[in-house]
Amino acid sequence: MGIFVLLFAVLIIAGLIWLLLRKKNVPDLPGSSLDDVGPSGVILVKGDGYLVEQKNRYAGGGEESFELKLTGDEDVTFWLNWYRDGGLIVTITQEVDFDELELTSADLDMFDSQQIGEFDFDGVVYHLSASGESQLYENCQSNGEPFYYWDFGDEEHKHVINIQYWDRNTYEASIGGYIQESDIEIYSMTEDS
Image 1 (cartoon, helix red, strand yellow):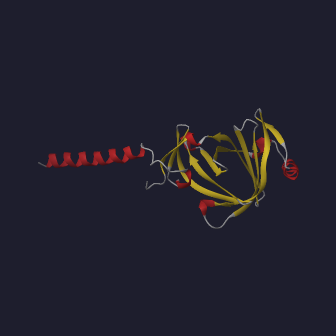
Image 2 (tube, one colour; image 1 turned 30 degrees about the horizontal axis):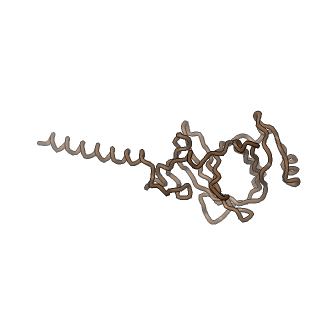
């Protein structure tokens, strides 16, 4: 009799585990969007799975954008950025050492003052698309941290480079590309969904 009770308990536990794992393999309800995704959510970008570590908001010049800090295979960090401009504009980037870009602060100042500029990196010519002041609201908190930015893209609208200058006298850069909204699948919006 004790063996049957133990076997029954094991079957119930296995069934619950199967249900929990099955839930994570089914995308969320239609109508869910990146705006709804938060920390501990899971998304697929072009078939690759990522865990959402953080959600940030940017605001400046009357515009607002968001980013998700993603962890992929081998704990590599990616940044999924999006804003709306008649549709959803999405990029996915990865940090690159600013010095690798072989740009100087004088180059960036000139690009900014003339609102035009280009440079070559890794065989791709990048053109200045925007620059200005913005605020980072880390974890979508109410207190923002100011920074200055330069956004670059290629003529084919495939590649992007983003550069930020922070008050602590540091430059940060990321490189990546545009992706389509259809390239993104939301598997869970948070750890509770």
